[in-house]
Amino acid sequence: MLSEEVQKRIAELKDKFPQRRSAILPAMHVVLEEVGFYNRDIQKQVAGLLDLSEMEVAETLSFYTYFPKQGVGKYHIQVCTNISCMLNGAEQLVNYLEEKLKIKAGETTPDGLFTLSTVECLGSCGTAPVMQINQRYYENLTKAKVDQIIDDLKNKTTK
Ligand code: FES
Image (cartoon, rainbow, N blue to C red; front, side, top):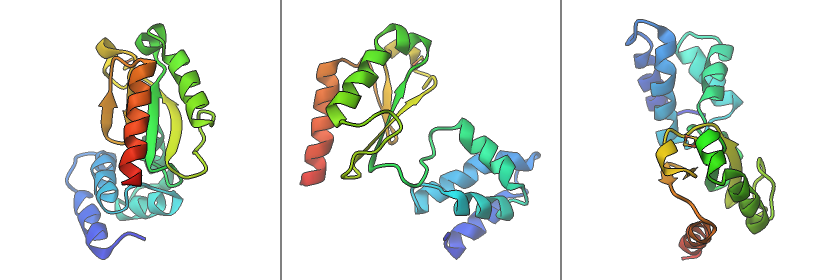
């Protein structure tokens, strides 16, 4: 599934770090550039290229929500539900998004546009509540801001 060029770039990362496992994240950034997501086959391929077990790669990827798995919608909405965000209305925000998108957290809209997930701390606790959509952060969220963000993304897609 990965191109020869990408495979070569990943293989070159193998001996760049004292701990081979440290090459997993840079390798996944290379994957992201080409494919935009990962799945079990890619995970296995990256493990092979880095001479690691698939489990080592899977463990790392399960910790970082930054790398989208195949099957997420065009826009992956990740709402932080950790302490600062929770105290500032994250739960209500998740409920609101579930109502608005007519899906539950963990699901994708039938048109494939949005996937809604809850995640741990996004590292922006001072601007809680926070969500990340693909690579972009949205902070100090309110229902009105969420409406604007979702409408803008829908409009962007229909243009
Ligand atoms: S608790 Fe939400 S960004 Fe840290």
